[in-house]
Length: 176
Image 1 (cartoon, rainbow, N blue to C red):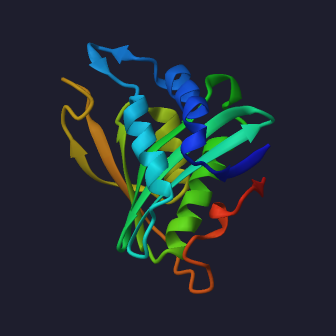
Image 2: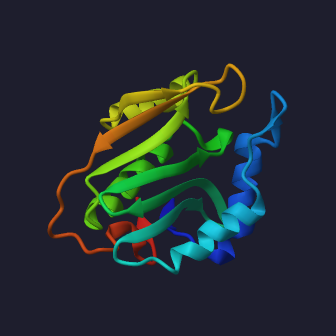
């Protein structure tokens, strides 16, 4: 099992996880991100700057990507934009390790908090986020479609003065 920063060459593997995790449609709404959206995020990883940055992490086992997390840092806030683990690879702590690595990266870049949106009925995700210090700060009615609300959650990030701006997750490979 290897965790590493992703780049543009990882698009096909990221899309395979996206499709298997989120499918294409639910309740008449598109759930999966498009290849164009993912390509933009993967391209942005290489364009990170001091005040803003993007990190896409992949958790791999050999040639297969099992999990992906997408983070966007601006000033003192980092957004967790997407975290997903293949259904067949769940229950082994991958989502938690992806989240922890992203939080460490964001803290190392000077972010003071991480925020995210999650479907209010996604119990597994809510357990994960609460276990990592996230609390609900607001609700977005209809965010995922009619009658499908999102909770906006936030967690404080520790002050990591000794971390590099890229943080430990940006290395070529990180074995976990």
